[in-house]
Image 1 (tube, rainbow, N blue to C red):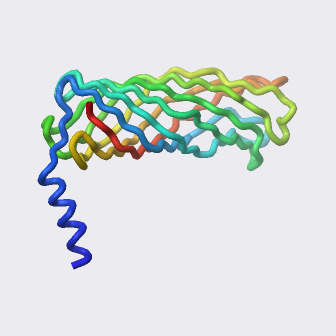
Image 2 (image 1 turned 60 degrees about the vertical axis):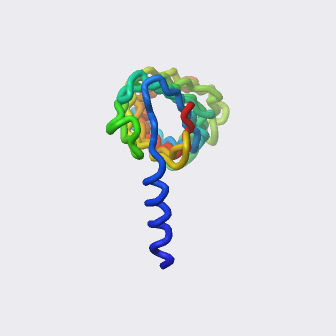
Length: 203
């Protein structure tokens, strides 16, 4: 009986509530976004390539449905901060904001309970608060801002009138030159995957 009750509750909820993403709708999603860099860089001396750790921040998206199937979405977030390592030791810390704009296609009907979607667009990543650590603590460090392509897959699941749950996965093409005092620029591809789990509200 304990195993059956959750299934019955979900079935009842899904049977009584439909998701509405109609032409002209505006909806927001807010939740947690984790940036997971898939980095590669020029070799730095004999120490290897630069490595960046993951970071989780608050993510926010705003979507306008142009038609029942097509939407335009803007992504914003609180600043992500990554520790940068070289040869296993931390050498820098850097923050960034990755605002993105997506054109989206939603599968299914406007009143479907579940709406999977895909998106493609552009990303502009702004780097700031670069700070040397460890062996580079006394060096000036800066990263060039990046402009590149972005893509996403996601799904919305209705949970109540105007409310829905969301999960989405983003890919961003982020390439930058890392400048360190007295050294040649270090060409670095960050190219992260970003997973976002959120709740949304339709206006």
